[in-house]
Image (cartoon, rainbow, N blue to C red; front, side, top):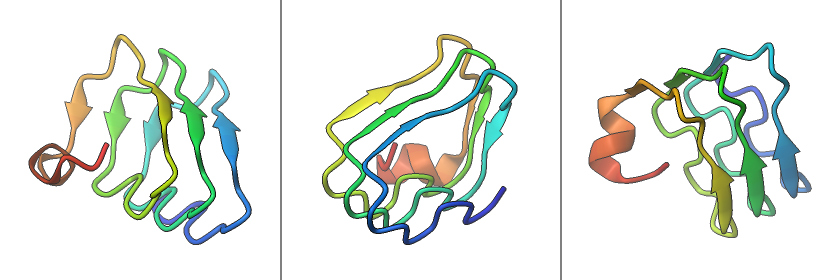
Length: 79
C-alpha cells in the first residue's frame, strides 16, 4: 500500500515476499538508512516515489516482469 514503510529511518535492507504484486506510492519514501532492496518477479507495478529520499540505496533488484512504473518514477528517475 501507499506509505507502507514511509520514514522508517532504521530500515536498512528489504526482501519482499513472493506474494506481493505491487509496491505503493512512497512505500519506502524517506527510509534514510535503506541501502538494499530485492523485489520478486511477482511485483509488476511500482508506485510513484516508491524510493524517494532513500539516499543510501545502492542495491536494488528489479523484477524481470516489471511492467508498470508510474510516470512520476520514470520522469523523476527515482526508482
